[in-house]
Each structure stands twice: as C-alpha cells, then as structure tokens.
Image (tube, rainbow, N blue to C red):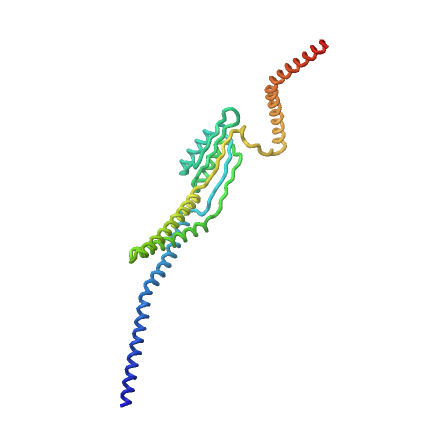
Length: 283
C-alpha cells in the first residue's frame, strides 16, 4: 500500500515538472517569435541604409564635383558700368547668374567703378573668364579651390539615417494605441523632420557652391587703378617722369586754389601798414 502511494506521488510530481517545462518552452518560443520581426526589421533597415548611402554617394560623385571654387578678378576698363553690363550678359549666357552688383558714378570727384559677384558654372569657368579678361587690362586675378568631399559624405550619411528613422516613426504612428504614445511619436517625428530639413538645406547649399564658382570682379578706370610695382629700370624711369609731371600739375592746381587767398592776405597786410603809418604821423 505504501509502495502504491509513493508511486502515485512520484507520477504526480513528474507530470507537474513536465507541465512546467512545457510552459517555459512555450513562453520562450513565443518571446523569440515576437522579437524576430523586430530583429529582421532592424537588420533590413541597416542593410537598406548602407546600400542607399553607397548608391547615393556614387551617384553624387558621378554628377557633381566635390570642390568649391572662388576667385577675384580686377580689370581696368574705359567705362566700368558698360563693361559690368557686358560681363553680366556673358555670365547669364554661360548658365550662371550675378549674385550682386554695385556701380559707383562720382559727381564731383573720384573715378567711376563697378563691382560684381558672379556665380559661374565650374565646367565653363575657364572660357568665361577668358572672355571677361578680354574686356580690359587685368590688374589682379586669383582662383582658389578646396575639397569638400568629406562634408558631403557626412551630410549624405546623416540624411539617410534620418530618413530611415522618419519612415520607422511613421509606421509606429499608424499603429499607436494610446494618446500618450501618439503624442510621443508625433513629437519625435517632428524633431526628426526638422533636423532632416536643416541637413537637406545644408546639402543643397553645398551642392550649389560646388556646381557654381564664386568670382568677385572689380572694374575701375585706368586713373583709378591701383599702382603696381615698377617692372625694370625703364618702367621705373617712366614712373618717375610721370610722378614729376603729376607733382607739377598738382602744384599748379594748388597755386590756383591759394591765389585768391593770397590776394586777401595782401589786402589785409596793406591795411595794417596804412594804419601804422597814420599812427606814426599823428604821434
């Protein structure tokens, strides 16, 4: 009898253990089943982002230069305002644009001048500059460039990640079950969208800077040109003669300005002398 009781208790305990193990296994299997889709989505998103970044970087490298070009050009021309209009037409016909322009036309003194900031496509920069330089005498020219490939790659990567995050948040927004979840997801989505817009604006600006060279053009008359260093003995001799002539002409101008004042001073001196003579005679 005791033996049967012991066997019955052992059978019950065995059944309970098997039931607990089955429940635990089912729970673990269910948890893994729930976590697998999330893992697949994360891995798929990572692969998609990496592939997208590589494809976009390759496309960008093939269609856009990664160098920003800037420069400065100074010309002496007979009529700066007319030459500025001609330069504007040349730049526009080349596919570029004039970012800013200012013309100075003196009334009483000074020399006329013009200033332009030209945005010229980099693929036609050299021929366009050649046409512009032919309009006058080149005083100074400088063209510089620097590579911005790393900045572009960094912006592309950050934009790709934010776009993936935005898509994921949009999916979560459609399945939100409570008001608090809805508000949290909408807030996160708005933050990602604002950051994405900012990065996209920076990317567009950088692309514009690489596609169009920025050339500052200064136009002056020969009289208003900046004096350069003489080139050789003959050039120095000519500069010296020109300075003597300029000094003589300047002296004549100042003499003409001072002559009326000298007449007034002479009259004052004459009056003073007459007053002194009269006082001496009275004394």
